[in-house]
Length: 389
Image (cartoon, rainbow, N blue to C red; front, side, top):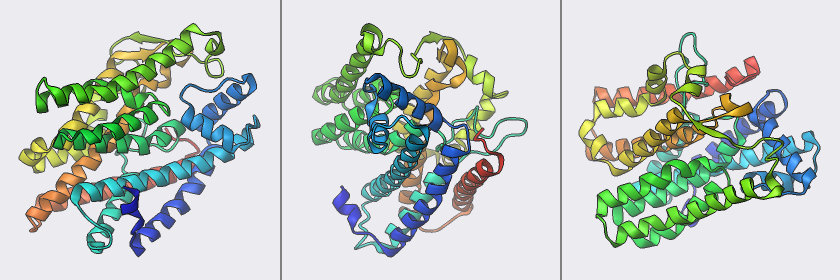
């Protein structure tokens, strides 16, 4: 797949330069001037290094620790965090552009103009954010397609995009060869942030069952889930039944309970409005093209992943000292991004078949552009206010 992306256009390099030029100062500011999750995660890494215990979800934490030379100095760890975050965001852009091009069968050398359009859309997808609601937080309470303050979510996104690409391709084609990369990216995502696995585990096999029936392909679809489940069970066994991890990460250890919207209500005074705000663009696409939207497997699959993630956040919550952190909501951001990617692909495919632009098409383009502009304004607001709420 990456052989395909190497054949880049000049505009692609310009967009990469713009992305890096914006990402580095943004992540630097979040690391050194905002009380973001960068600090909490750097503290976790320092704790693991001091105790000589490797973190269980080790891909992000281990990468930062190694880049920092196993230093426990916060400044060193935060500098390493900035580098890893910038690389992760660039990887997210690359895999997004790659997947859009593969889905739409666009070659950057033979279809340079169309590839440039997809590259611009990919950059726009990285900026998409929701509308600030009156008397509510801009971010907290919503699940926008992108976040900038949570390092493990940002680090997981390239794996989540690739997991969605290969699993959706299997659902569309039934080709068993898609299951090996699906299992690999499932494992890589889980070893970076387990949240990505929570919705994938039930939804992917259910879609395979609905698509192919209770036969060989359904059983094959259960293999990546079994791989991820084995890893997750191994994590739980180490965390709860071995003395190495009895103190968790810097004193934190997950404690879960059941409830109904308890954590969500702490951050949103109107949960239905928060949901509508978070998925405004997919809902507009549904209204504009209901038949094509409901008939597109990738859109249905991404929507189902997101719906299960939202339900999980509504019902399952952390208890104890981290009860208000909303750690059961991270999968919603990842799958909302994937839903927006699927909607963009479906819309581009429609306009290939129906080149004439109508009012609904311009409305969708304006909505996409407005949400990308809101994302840029949100980043500027972080610089202005010194927080990400």
